[in-house]
Length: 216
Picture (tube, rainbow, N blue to C red):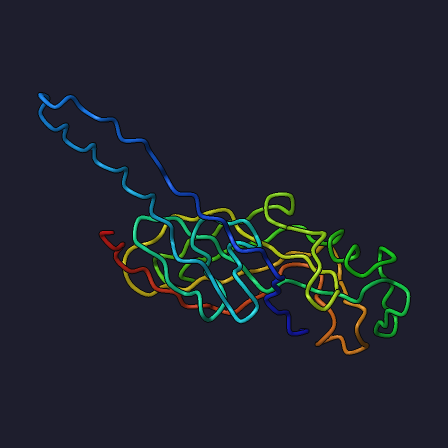
């Protein structure tokens, strides 16, 4: 299977807003008013930042992202989102190269992939008594119309939020289901350039750890 990769783009820095107020002058005879407690800042989970950028910002995800090697930890009692490497293809059908006998269903390779993508299945703790399986259709998870820094189109599956399991180490595995074989237009080697029809593992068993949520 072709090596898919996590893709990012240059994203503007986020602006941070500050709270302000106007102090009122109390009469000299009045006792000093006690200061109202400041609102506790809303906790924000750490972002998934790789060499290619901040994936939370890129994909507008507020929950913890689990997927890349640098992003394999989440807090207890919080929700997390599984992200997998995006699937990129040749820019267009013009000049695309395919294995012998393969005919795409759409002129452009990325449209061919999107049209054949059916669903993704997420397996938590595969092969253990705690195994749980969740399947989501294309319209629920597949983000399309994306372009990487190299100018190539890609699509990426981003899960809905999951509840964190109990403290400790767990695994998460992602399967894709395609309606038919898809090839990316980059070459003629089926094992490197194509995804099979049906259901198949898109990732291995990626370990991640659930840790106690910090007090502050």
